[in-house]
Every structure is written in C-alpha cells, then in structure tokens.
Image (cartoon, rainbow, N blue to C red):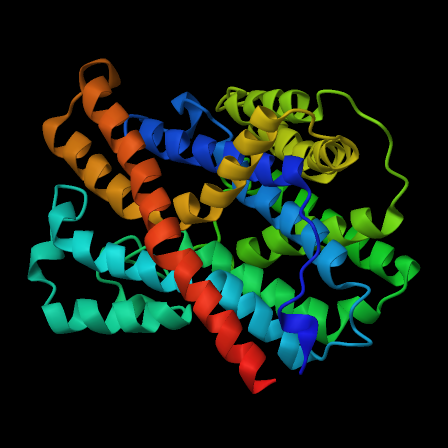
Length: 372
C-alpha cells in the first residue's frame, strides 16, 4: 500500500490562520468594490494582492509538504493529492455560481436573463474542470474565464504552478530556483510599472494580455514561496499571528498610492509588497509559535474556512454588486445588507466545509488509498 497519499505533515498553524485573515479581507474588499467609482477610491484598496499572497503561501506549503517526499512519491501521487485537496471545492463553487446566476440579472449584466439554461449548465460543467472558457462562451459580459465563479481563474494558475513544480522545479537546485525567482520578480515589476492602472490587478480572462498578467502574478510568489521554505533558518518570533495579521490588514487597507497622476508609484508599492513584504510576513509567521488553546482554535478555524470562503463567496458578491448597481445606493445605506452578505459568505463557506468538502475529501482519500 502506498502510504504517501494518506500521510501528511503537521501544518504551520499561523500560516493557516493568516490565510483565513486574507480570505476574510478579500470578501470585504469585494463588498466595498461594489460601491467604488474607480480603483482610486476603492476601500481596502489593495485587497486584490491577497491573490499574490495566497500564491506565496501555497509555494511555501508545497515546498514544506513535498520537497522531501519524491523518493517515495511519484508525480501521479502528487497530482492526486492536489486534486483531492482543491477540486471538490472548485466543483461546489461552480454549482453555487450556477444556482445564483439568474439572481444576478441587473444593469451591470443586463443579458443574464437571455442566457439559456443549457448554456449556463455547459459553462458550469466546464468550470468543474477549471478549463477556461473562451470569450465566445462568456455568459456574463465580463470576459471571465469562469463566468459563474470569477475567482476560479486563480485556481487555474495555481494548478499550472503545481504542474511546473512537480514536473520541473522540484528538481531545481537553490541556485537555479533563485534565478527563476529573480527573473519572475523582474517580470512582475515590469507588469506593475507598465499596467494601465498602475497595479497587479487582472488575470481572469483568456486573452493574451490577461494571460500575461496571470502568469506574471503566479510565477514569482509561488516559486518565491518554495525558495523561502528551502532557505530555512527560522527565528523565534513572539505574538507572530497577531503581528502578521495586523501587517496583512495594513497592507491590504493602504489607499491607492500616487493618485491618477502618478500611477507608477502604486506599481512600485505593489511590487515591493509582493516581492519583499509578503515573504517577510510568511517568514515571520513560519517562525512563530501558537501558545494557548484559544489562539490555536482561532488559527485552525481561520485556516479551515479560508479556501471555502475564497472559492464560494463570489456568487453572493455578484448578487450584492448587481443590487447596488440597480439601486444606486451608497455604502452608508447599504450597510445592513453588506453585513448580511459578508456573514452569508462565511456561513456558506463553513457549511460547504463541514457538509461537503471534508466528507468528500475523506472519502476520496480512502478510495485512493485502497487502490494504491
């Protein structure tokens, strides 16, 4: 029996907790986004950088979990583990997107009611595989590669990074990996400084420009995370979860830098944050320890719901954003509904975790272990 699929290493609880903090900030970012008139006045302005933070966390955790296992594990085993971990929530996220789709009809997406059910179901089934749909199959009007659940684009690139790691990068020496990370960092800086809006936003469409953004956003943080793990040499950091959580909140909440006249300044902020600040936060978090049962429970809860929140919240955000656009209502008046939307995202994610994700992954792991 191949035990590599059933064995797992202990988690870094603070990293799990930080993932949850970032996911909760993403939901708030998208709620405020419904009321923004432009990138300049968006509240929690840099919440979009959570994607880059997730990529870096994933790279670090992948390095920790798998770098020393390849003598006992093959590429197929690795892909099975990643599919079991990620794919069930991808599927339920697309189903939720399909169930919510026709409730999102609004001035933002005025043709939703014209989309035949068969076409919506076809897009949903394709979404189960995370294969991007071309713009000719866009059923919303935003040219998303996953129109029923927008954040699916980042999982698409997550899988690509996992494939590159398993087939090639895992074999890289520290020097070769450092060169890859350095070149990827240059590509990220170029993207941030030449972006029309002076930021790293984008990657969700299947066109050359958006594909360039998506690959640039995943290559540096993911493989910088792997390199960070391989560098080791952790230190002792007290109150690491609280400190790193505050740092994440501050980074995401920072107002747009430079305004409309100096967009490049915000590009520098994004670059420095992803290239230097995020690795520092992950390093500090990995160096810390959790003391106390309550703190451990908080980190575990945040870690458990982080991925479910991220992959299921957007169908609710679509509905909320369409409602705001129809009513032309400011945030001060929409506040009770925004709180309801926020809480609904958390409740939905927790329900999916307990009633679907954990049982399905347990069943799949048992099935795969029996066949091994």
